[in-house]
Length: 86
Image (cartoon, rainbow, N blue to C red; front, top):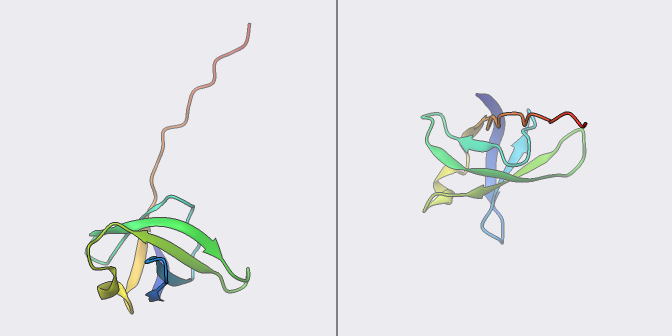
């Protein structure tokens, strides 16, 4: 589990916008301090020195996470095995 940053507000397209500290990967699962699923990382934008992270929420009321610190639970995909060419 890695801290992403603090949720600032809800965007016009209903995504949570966070001020990023540690950058996650696109598609990573986002959780709160109680490990309750909040959504998935949708986009990373803004300046490299101070990026923002857009979270596509999977909860009914995403506005209750505004002002809270959110974390990422990295989705570990098993690496595909490559077959040797003959």
